[in-house]
Length: 179
Image (tube, rainbow, N blue to C red; front, side):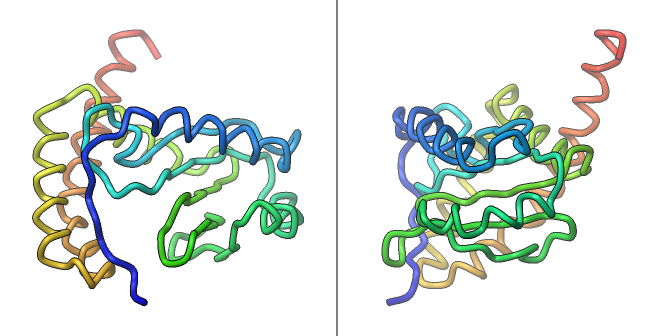
């Protein structure tokens, strides 16, 4: 059976689900894990989303993370290597065709860490942008219910635009606080 694209109303348990899963993953990664963040649409309060929890992991060394693939597999994660993003390690945890969790791991200092956090924080701080993104996702989910790749492509331009706004917004915040 093919994966169905489904955007559901916000679930207030998503943050708790993230915390529980991040705790399990952190036990496996040990001292190599520097930080874990809840990212993606499920991290934006009130936003409808695909019910997949995205977790951003910041690690000291990717090579040390690679030695944890077997232990992560014991938690149900399938390693997908970089999966299209240079310098990332990507893992998915599924129940049948339903994606439960995605892990996006980067070594400390990788630019995509800030990109993901900026995007999340911008949507939280700018409810209008969050509503626009939600509306886009809902329309794409209806249009591409049986085509996850097309759903993802349909979001790409909007995401790139918001990432630009988010970077400028973050730079402005950093200037305000003297960083």
